[in-house]
Image (cartoon, rainbow, N blue to C red; front, side, top):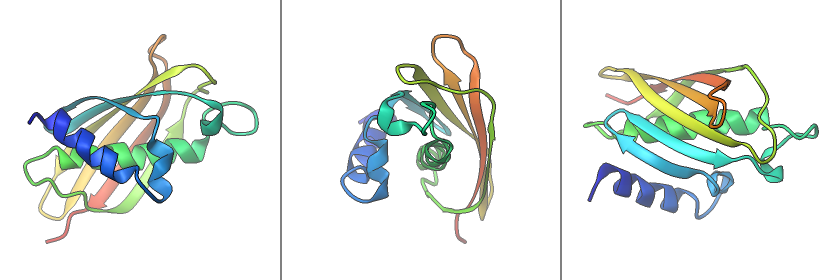
Length: 138
């Protein structure tokens, strides 16, 4: 089974209950060691009151997609969040397709550092960029 297929099973299990159901419309495009790419069509349920992709939803994407990238490493540990920051660069509107790409910047004994870019699929314009630090245990 390929890494992409394995990660699809993880995503399916995550979206069954709880808050992570908000990720139901996220489609896994590819999974490679330390890198995951997903896609999302912005729909009304993902937006704020002015009709653009909600900042809290973007934070959820950064959190979850970076964790998926950690699952695609030899260690395969999801870890727990220590720090996360997001820079919001441009709006994404209803109907636009967004690409979410997470990279592992560094994975040490106890900490992992990730970067996540959200870009407009049609224009390549950066929507947001997140950095996520996770504690992996001992």
